[in-house]
Image 1 (tube, rainbow, N blue to C red):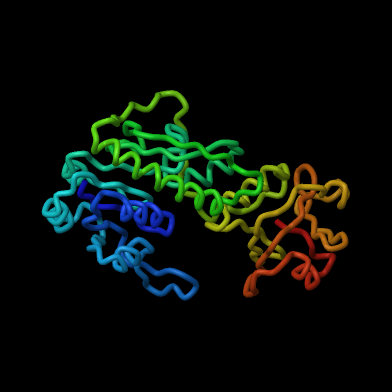
Image 2: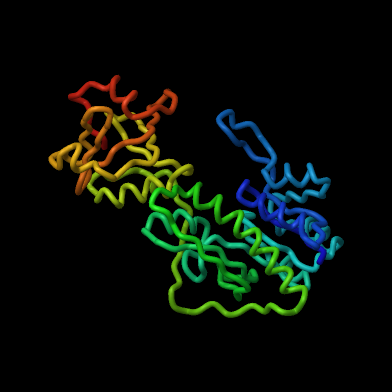
Amino acid sequence: MRLVFAGTPQTAVPSLDALLASRHTVAAVLTRPDAPAGRGRRVAASAVAERARHAGIEVLAPQRPSDPAFGARLSEIAPDCCPVTAYGALIPDSALRVPRHGWVNLHFSVLPAWRGAAPVQHAILHGDQITGATTFRLVAELDAGPVFGVLTEPVRASDTAGDLLKRLAVAGAELLVATLDGIESGELEGRPQPHDGVSYAPKLGRADARVNWKLPAQAIDRLIRACTPAPGAWTTLNGATLKLGPISLAGVAAAGGPDLLPGEVRVVGQAVLAGTGTTPVRLGDVQAEGKRTMPAADWARGVRGADRVLD
C-alpha cells in the first residue's frame, strides 16, 4: 500500500523504520513543526522528520493538520492508508476521509484501557501488571475506533515510563506492519471496542509529578517511575526544587528504621532514606537546583542534618 506515516517523537521512529523495511511504500510523513528542544531550547526538527529526511522522504509539518494546504497535498499523494504513532495532534474529518483504508493508529495500551496522551505513564502510576499496544482505526472520538490487533507486555517492577515505552515502541512497530498487511490482504477487519473497561490517561504535567511524602512508599515509587523521564518527579528542600530519579523499596525498612516522618531524610551507611506514609524509601539519583544529577549519597553530604526534610 501507499502510505503517509504520521508521527513525531523518537517513540515513533521504530514504526517508521519498520514501515520502510516492509512491502509498503512510505510516500511522505506527517509530523509536528520544528520546536524548541533540549537544554538550550534550540528550535529543532522532530525525530521522525530527521529520520524521514535521511531516508529521502517528503516531510509534511503543518502548524495544524486542518490547514487547507496540507489537506490538498494529502489528496495529491492519495495514500491508501495513513498509519499513526504518537503524532500529537487531532486529525480532522476531512483528512480522515482521504485514504481508502483510513488512518490506523498504534496506541500504547490495551484498549479500551488508558485512552489518551499518556497511557504508559498511567499504567505504571496505577500499578498495572500488564499493558500492551493496540492498532485501531481513527475516528472522531478519542481512541475509540475499531481494533485491528493487540499485543501485551508485562510491566516490570523497576520499569520507568521510558523503559516500558521503548519496549512497546519496538514491539508495536511489528504489530503496525502486520496490521497493514492484514488490511491490504482483506484478512483483517476492525472489531468494535467493548463499552466496559474504558479509562483515560491525560498528559501528566509538572504539578502531577510532585511527590507527596505522606503517601505509601509503593505509591511514591510508582509516581516517580511513571514520571521518568518526563515530566520528571520532584520535591522541595527548604523551598528549592529537588528532582528525583527512581527510588528503591527493597530492604529499606530493615536498614533505616520505620520511625522516619514523611519527607524526613536520614543517611544510613551509603543509603539515603526518606520517610513516607508507610516505610522509608532509598533515594537514587537526585538533582538540586543549578546542579548536575548525582547519587543521593553525594548530594546528602552537602545538606545540613537539621534541614533534611523534603516537602
